Amino acid sequence: MEPSPLVRPRSFVVRGRKTEAQQRAIDEHWAEFGVDFDGARLDLDTIFGRSAPRVVEIGFGNGENLLALAARHPERDFLGVEVHGAGVGRVLAAAHEQGLTNVRVVRHDAVEVFEHGLAADSVDEVLIFFPDPWPKARHHRRRLVQPDVVRLLVGALKPTGVLRLATDWEPYAEHMIDVLDAEPALVNVAGPGGFIPRPDERPVTKFERRGERLGHAIFDLEYRPRG
Ligand SMILES: C[S@@+](CC[C@H](N)C(=O)[O-])C[C@H]1O[C@@H](n2cnc3c(N)ncnc32)[C@H](O)[C@@H]1O
Image (cartoon, rainbow, N blue to C red; front, side, top):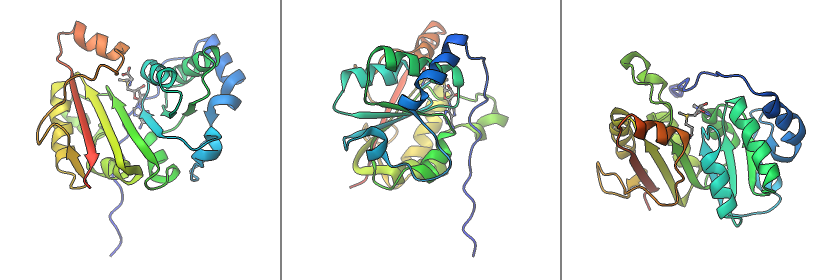
């Protein structure tokens, strides 16, 4: 029997224009921080020029979290995956300005990057913060957190790895719990159905601020591979 095809959500819309400065940052700094992805396996040791603990952030937006963590943890390498050109430009400009050497950026659908680009057991942390909630019922299938995607993330995570998520959209938080608690290869660190307290280390991003302005509660989740 043919294996059933992977359900790949189209979890993003490419929107917004890059400013001239963001385009210039891409032109000038892509060679330093950008990673061209053509569907082939990424050699992270070559990309970062060393072997170090690896964090992958999916959908880093403007890069507030990616940049803050990279500056705080020079001993770790940070691979950001984002489709939004303006955010990519912003991160390239900031990484250059701050002289960061442990950040690289892939501008591509993260689902394909996990499916083809990342080797099994190669990633220490996967971060998904404030993914697009796709609130309408007919759009729920566009949510990034889906069983097939979660299996891809689990495949890339080292057995000692960790998957961290946050959202300000309660129905998406519940959806995340349903999908992630049902994945037999993962353990919810907070216990079944549970959320962790907001980690101090996670910087407040534009999307978290927006959620707070709207009076939304913030939900943090943490999962580890089942040993
Ligand atoms: C609501 S924003 C949150 C940005 C950021 N994490 C934050 O907390 O500010 C979600 C981001 O995920 C990106 N995104 C959605 N699906 C993606 C995918 N499959 N691959 C890469 N990026 C994706 C979108 O382009 C968008 O920038």
